[in-house]
Length: 267
Image (cartoon, rainbow, N blue to C red; front, side, top):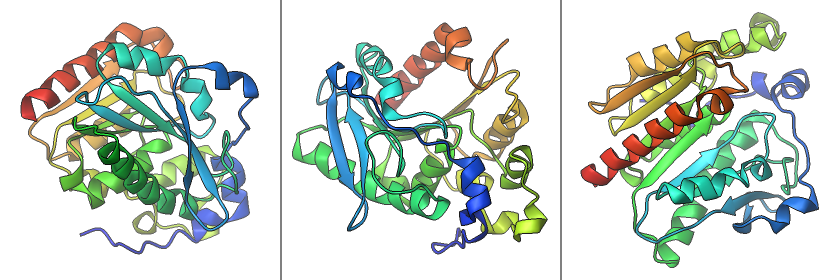
């Protein structure tokens, strides 16, 4: 059983946040793109932005948590592509990103994903959306979706991890942080590798062959740790962390399409 009250104190240190989070604000230009802009209250003072790219009420819905240098508006063009695949697509930000208020920290990110999940579930129910619910996270966003998959396995129907990390220590070292110097221990971190081990529903792992930030071995480790009977690992050849979709668009979308088809069968 994963602890429901993890201690993220070491990861909330300013020197960690400065390297882990790279927030930027959304320009007003993106407001002309399709999709419903939503502000989700996550505390008494702060709201997190999301965009609901909705197509049909009986389609599967993806709740998507992006990487640490991205914002919701970066996915304005991808939302309609997902819609053509028969998917409702909901990317969400972190505090301080895009239209969101506040300052990002690991504790806030891991707390807010629960609020975002519950808000979105309620919104879908109130608006008549009945299709399967899929959790999808890219890079840093893998921590949020694995947290949710671990805590709400009966309230979601599948999991997609793209460019996700298995362990915290190698990621911190890559960012130039010495884990021992900040008192970080793996068991007090994100525990992605442990959390995926609790989720038995259909799971898709997508990872770049030459990911220079989170190596392919992390994707392999997550796949190996998954107990799901229906699981698949897709390696995008010749790509790295930041060009995975550009270089592997066909393979990437094909994997998504096949995964959704299997989810619909299971559902």
